Length: 329
Figure 1 (cartoon, rainbow, N blue to C red):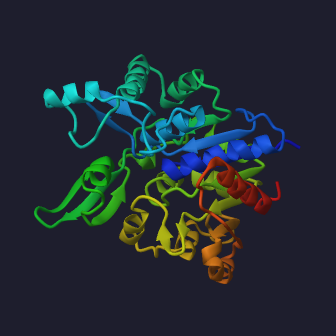
Figure 2 (spheres, rainbow, N blue to C red):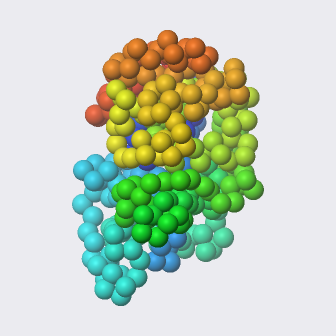
């Protein structure tokens, strides 16, 4: 049987995991396609900037699958230039601390044009996917604009709110966060095809992305959590915490803001077991966290320890294979 796999993902960790999912299918002799691999992508960190619509996680995963991503920086296009960005800054347009590469800006301009013509974010992604053979179907979590807003405790100005990208990129998460919100998300709906893909899947995998600002917004879209709880497919998550530390970024700061311990156990508890109103059936922890298995199983999850460092597509595929083994697929 050719499995139908759905992955919930965002960020650099999500990109690496999705590459691993495609490679895992190829190992089985399956030509990865939109029929076998669907990726539900976080759009909570999207924003309007300099008159164009940016979708950082969508683009990171698209570029990674297309093989044109900048692996050194972890974002944007490889071999990109910044001539237009410099000109924008000379005009005082945009954010001087948020760089837009020229090739990357071409994507944003194309997206914005399509949106202005009436296309939905789902339709835009469909058009983007025709340029490269991605080997997967990419779906935004929702077609609604539900950008992430961070309320911070600014020592100079007191509590104030800013877009997630300003807090993440400009301040490098150094301003203590008090809350993360996605204004309007309570009125949002899953993008067309998302709930159906989850319902028809043979396995649903939650990538080792930031649990708060990458996976959190996906689960907050009304209808997605219930779809995960109702699907007959096993739902398997992969811990983004290895040895009590985050692999990349500032997920520990995000977790601390919502009162969750930075540990494999803490994130497992955040997602919860489907037995107790959560979304998971099984949880992969890093081999460094093997001692956490007993506690994770007490939450109601099947747990196994595996090497979780995604240093290359081969090792990422190994992790996906381990997750699929937990799903018995």
